[in-house]
Image 1: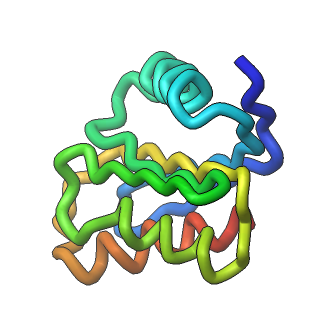
Image 2: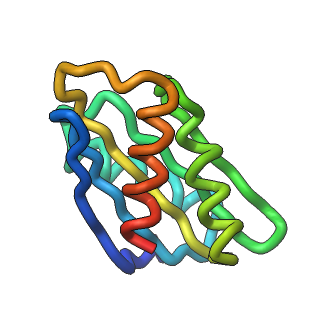
Length: 116
């Protein structure tokens, strides 16, 4: 794995916890899969592990069943800050209060921006 963690942070919004990590990556497929495995193991209680990747002319994002298109929101952050060769992964542990589509998108955007 050639992914290197640059920054990590935590955001709490209405009891839901969002664990965001920014990684420097070199390979789209192997690094993304390695980071996903780390997050699934590290955040076992998280129902969703959403991410976005921007590497050269390639981009990828995953919502992992979460509402509010968080993968797209995270990808927009990478594009806004021109972070080519980076990946943002956010794992959410549900706190029992539904945030709605807008609230989820806002929480993912804020947690992603926090690690940038």
